[in-house]
Image 1 (cartoon, rainbow, N blue to C red):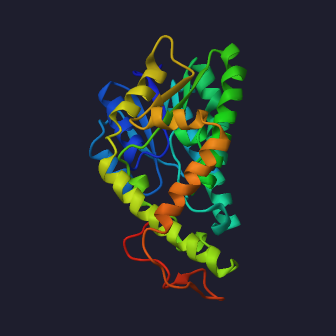
Image 2 (image 1 turned 90 degrees about the vertical axis):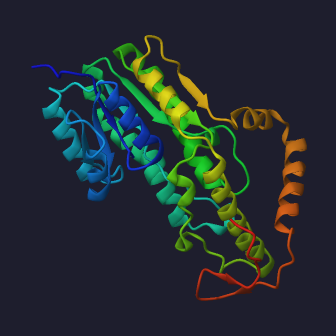
Length: 311
């Protein structure tokens, strides 16, 4: 028997956009397979989703879990998946020179390789249903700012991946869309870059001091964004439109900060770079700092950053 309702797999549904989207689509009659990494997150979703939908354990970096989820959905949907939403992602912030190579690899493993692996696995099921693929990128895939180079690099890569995929699959009846959100109120702003991903010990003291100050500034900035950013309703609506509309758009940009960021992206580097440099210097020097004391055995800088600065 064919499935009773449209089916969709969403990755990264434990919090934020993915969680809100899973609830919205379930309420609208979709059969939602909600990807989570922990049983605690699965239990929380079971309490808010209808019996028609279910959480599935899916770490997008785990090939075994991807295969197991594929086999499960294959059986449950008779080999037809109407929608795939690649939403799972992480953000690692910090000056490029201060982050470790391991951090870069993990950023790409989740945000780029994860999208590739999940899409590659489930594409035959989506194609069988003439379905839709939606990838949640970021406005950082168009505009890179100081202190978010590693994250922006992953989202620039995703944008290129989706661009090719969209053209390749159109002849098979699969529509592919990229959603590029600005800042929304999600748990991602409360997940700071882990200390093990920041290596200041190899840097000269003045560079290490500024790097440590930048990390503190970023922490504070992300706390402010978490409070002031809008709820993800508009982003959820854009994803639902991409999944359901007769004529979905290839790209959706959503968020209160989108226009400002796009305008800045058009400013010539000869004007933008000095302006951003002056702003960075003002922020980094907004409070006096003590001389950096860099530990040769630990990736830390002690004593150089005042309490009110943040990452």
